[in-house]
Length: 239
Length: 216
Image 1: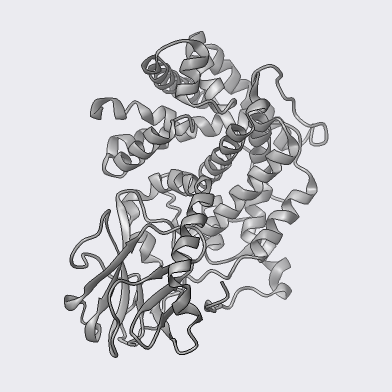
Image 2: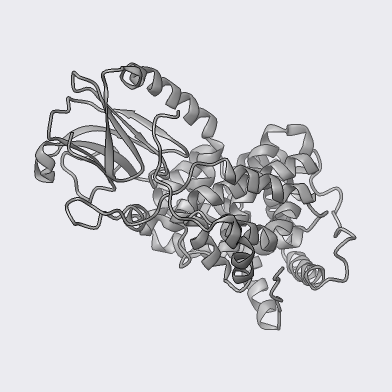
């Protein structure tokens, strides 16, 4: 299979892979410089095919509809945050940290769109499980020092992280949440993983958050790890 | 979902919009994507002005339906807006990236609308009349002839695999079934065909392709 997977590059560039092979290819791609290079060149070829397709003009309304969509979107935040620890917490670096994956990301972004319905359903399930915390009038809202969103903690220390603006995690990677006592990353405790999706992300944390803890998110190998291996891309204020 | 209030940045206000647009026409596609990542709506509008027509032509070719094609383009540009921050120019041109998103959307839609692609190659769409005579129309015609002439140089089975996949939205296993050949054969044809097409197009580019700058 490993020898044959390179051959799938053409099918991938043409969006002709069947779902299972597409997933296999997307897992393979980030680590394969040969496929990344070949895919980039094939994409130039498919762009020529796109240009050659030509057809009728789009209706003038289309432009306005697209811009209306965009105006209805929540604002995007990509500015360096003023960290209270006077450490530049790189929100944009979320993407930069995964730069190797970027070419592949193009396909992933697209597949994330096609999977949006499933993702939405899954998100609803998760939401149900965490809704109790979100609607608890005694829950505290803790703002984030890095990242876009909020941490909600109920009096029992059960917490929900509400995030916006994260891309789906790259293939072979996952977002992993941490409860960090006293903000000391060396003592971070695992609090669950999530794949990321378009739009808002609502994640209940495993474990209990106590006063002074910081909740953080890092990008980690799929399945998660026992201790963070990358810098947090999301970090809450101390609870 | 109104449980949080994202930080709002100082984005260009409406009063600056005209001035911003004027600046944007001089920017590369890639620079525009970087601006889109910062929430610049005018940059997205400019990208649409540059790529929208080809995007729609592509979606229409796959979907054979104006309404569906518009939906595909609309969703793709929304994806551009949402994911622009992760775009990396060293791996692909911005236009390539956008058209990849459009194509993926169109294929997703056509696979849900089985009836639409009974015969994807039956008719060849032609350029819309309005823009005939413009520089963009001339460039599109030039490109189309260049690509078609390259396609004609491919062995029939390779050309068929590529056209049915890219314009027809057929997956490899669907093609294997439709053409009555093993899946492995389809994979090989597709790879050999696309590699050959790439080389043919590279050659014809060196012979002298041209691309005017479209600025609105």
